[in-house]
Image (cartoon, rainbow, N blue to C red; front, side):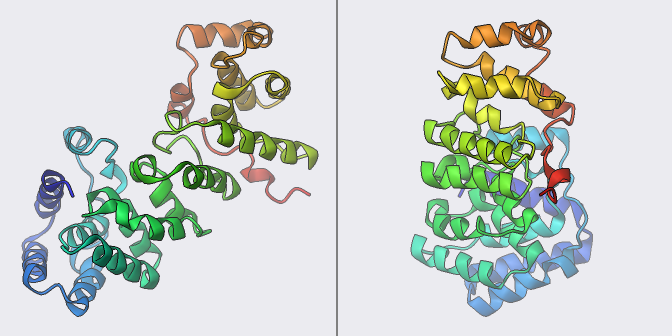
Length: 301
């Protein structure tokens, strides 16, 4: 656990609470230091929304910058006061890695959706975070998108603690539940040849079924696009969907195959935008162009 990060989170929360709520939370945190029994923990954890409310934590711009300095990838910008309060309670628990893992698992097994979101958002602030990985893997099984995205989006935990198999499973699962890939931290850093093959298989299945291909998959394919894969990118480059064309161009731009330049040369305007920095995955995200492009087609045969 990063003590400075927890102290900072506590300060943010306390500064946003009224006097009664602040006194209640201070009392709960102090009590848990001397009595961290399951009963005390569950009572505190379950009472947080009623006591603290569900308003946004709303950290200032400088607070978000501080968060990044304290824990690279920590992004509490979308947290609520209830999220922050629950995470404060959990991050203060002590014990062996096995004990903390068991308690975290028990809380996850009885949590409602809102509580699950809070539990997974705080992963990197807890003690012994690596020990929590088996339960986090269970969390990825959910089809509740908000819970899945509490793990996968704006969370440095998967980047830091998932092995390649777990990582690839998470990225593929995002496609199946119409979740975006852009907010996945480390998407480019953790790209791998196996994931590229998985994404290609997914694209071929979609094409065979006459369904559109999520344009974000090409981000995972580009760095490994060689030989016949260039033809797949060429097909995407000829799509009627503007997002898919841009994504295919970006993928071709990072392909290690020299022949990719010929495909990219067929779309000089896009190639120029990439060269001049006007087109990038980041610019597409900033323009709101990274939402799944297949969600509206979900009920297509």
